[in-house]
Amino acid sequence: MSENTLSQRLHALQTQIPPHVRLVAVTKQVPVAVIRHAYALGLRDFGESRVQEAQAKAQALADLPDITWHLIGHLQTNKARPALHLFPWIHSVDSLPLAQKLDQLSQDLPRPPHLLLQVKLRPDPQKYGWTVPELCAALPALSQLHHVNIVGLMTILPLGLTASERQQVFSELPALGAQLQPHLPLREYSMGMSDDYPQALAAGATILRLGRCLFGERPKETDAIPPIQ
Ligand SMILES: *Cc1c(COP(=O)(O)O)cnc(C)c1O
Image (spheres, rainbow, N blue to C red):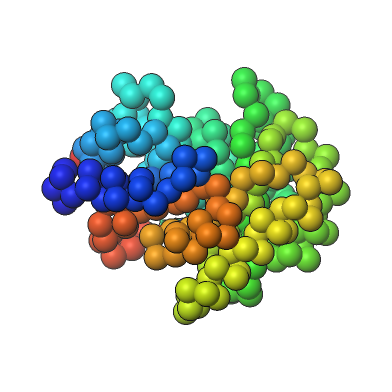
């Protein structure tokens, strides 16, 4: 993709995104050279799905001091330690054992990480995340975790909804957060991807995670980690 295209896409998006909403540019499978260009255009928040891919990129971009990396993909408990080293934000906390592990490991960190709890607002066997009843059941244990900042909720919609259904489902996330606020100080709602961010904004998103509408289509997903350029 030409550099102009990225800058045009970003400017078009910025006219739609209110200033209080954080744009996380999702750079999975995006080469380091393109991330550098995105940085030069002013982006500072970058989202990655895999710890290993992100580590390689962070190393290649170590000369850019003020990047904030966001983990948006499923995290295995055995990768929690390297994940905490790289990501001050983890959007994909999807189980109590993972949350507890992150809390335990965060005792030694200079700053507590920002965690978001990934919620499945509709049943979806393909996705990780808490159902609402599961999350409610975990609340007492989650509110005992004092080395992490649980700041919000994240969701990914199931496929096949109309625009008005998407907005309806998204609006359940801030409503759920408000319900849980006596237990957890939730204020961030990470929702909205390239195909559904207008509905997420209308429903109260505070963080958008956008990949393809900035960087273009990704090559077909494989398990292989793409070369770092
Ligand atoms: C890939 C990914 C995104 C970005 O998706 P696009 O459709 O490219 O905008 C957002 N969130 C998560 C969890 C993802 O895995």
